[in-house]
Structures are given as C-alpha cells and as structure tokens.
Length: 281
Image 1 (cartoon, rainbow, N blue to C red):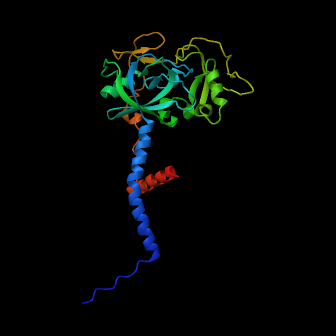
Image 2 (image 1 turned 120 degrees about the vertical axis):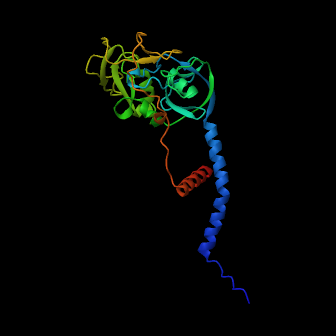
Image 3 (image 1 turned 180 degrees about the vertical axis):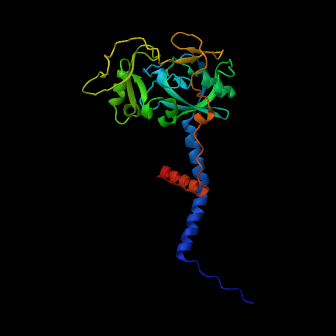
C-alpha cells in the first residue's frame, strides 16, 4: 500500500512554525537578560537599627509612617525616595528621607520585622548589622507610608524650601510633582500650625499659609512616636515619654509587600518576550 502523499505546508503555517522556533530559542535568553538586569539593580548592605526619627529634608514625622524610614549614606534626591529592603523571604518598603553619616540604618521596627518576622513592639530583638539587599523602586510603592491627601510628600514650609526649590528647578521630578507644604516648623511636629500652605514658585520662594509662617505655637495633636531599641517601648519622640500602643500597626507584611498579580501564563510569556525585544532593540 502506497503511503499517502505529504501535503506541502501553506506559507502562513510555515512562517508561524519558524516564528515559534525562534521564540522558543529566545525565551531562555530573555529570561537570562532580565535576571541579570534585575540583579544589577540590587545592592547588598549591612543594615543596622535606628530608634529616633529624623529627616534632613524636613519631612514631617506626624504625616508619615516613622516605622518605615531608611537612613542611607546617600544624598536624598527628588526621585529616589523609596527603596525595597529584603531579608530572607521578607520585604518592606521604606521612605528614604534622611541621610546617615555612613551606616545603612532603618527604623528599628522595620529592622526587627525583617530579622525576626515580628514587630519590635511584640518581640523586640537586639543585634547589630545584618546583611540585607535593597533596590530603589518607584515612589508609588511607598504610598501606604504617607498619610496625606493624594499621598503627597509632607514637608515643612519653613525648613524645606531649599529642597523643594531644587526639585522644582528640575524637570518632572517625583517630589516636584508630589509634595505638600505644612506650616509646621520641625520634623517632630511640635511647633507651628497643622495646615497646608501654597507656593507660587518661582515668583515667590516663600510659602503662603493661613497663619503667619514662622510663628511656632506648641502643637499637641500631631504626635510622632519612636520605638526604642532594644526594649520595643513606644515613646513620644519629642519627650521620650513611654506611651501605650495607640498608633496604627504598620508592620503587616501584606502592606509592605505588593499584592500578587494573577496573569495568565501565555500573557506573561508575551510580556516577557516584548520586554526582551524592546531591551534588545
């Protein structure tokens, strides 16, 4: 019995098969490229706990989560104000709003959670520098750490003007497009008025506030808390007075880690290939 004759493949089918073969060869290469690119963005550092909130650019502690602050030995610029810090299988996002003299410090609660998996107020731990990895991430990853309308970075109208002006003088910086000024004189929010101010820059280099800028009455309704090392006690940052645990718990891992994205496998493959082709071009 003679075998059935082989029918020639139609041109579109031949092209599809050739494309499929090329894609099967490109996928491992693309995965390798993306993996090396991601690795290049991460940094290994030795991280130490930091007990007292501060901000060299005038960020207001009463308007942010002071348990999620990074104190890096790097100038605070107008775009890279959010980092993801990882230890073992735990990751937290941190606002980078202060500069250390040389150490890679983070808020004690963040350090304790990364190291042990527990909040410092629940199971405080003593220790020194721990090897961790970090990478700069899009500032929107730190939105949950900012407690202002529109998630705008809260800055002191009287003490942050040099920083704000430097960001506004540049084109399309994150802080330049996402800041709000308050008539509060210090980062611990102990003096001034809890009110927002307007800035008509560069026409004026001083903000306009409902109350006179620079007056400094005592503020009693905007507390800033520190978690003391190594006891885990919560204290008022302005006085050191021990207080009960009344502040919101911001150490939930679900808040610090992005929600998983459920993408169909085929769509994910196409997105990966598109990224690789764009990278290669």
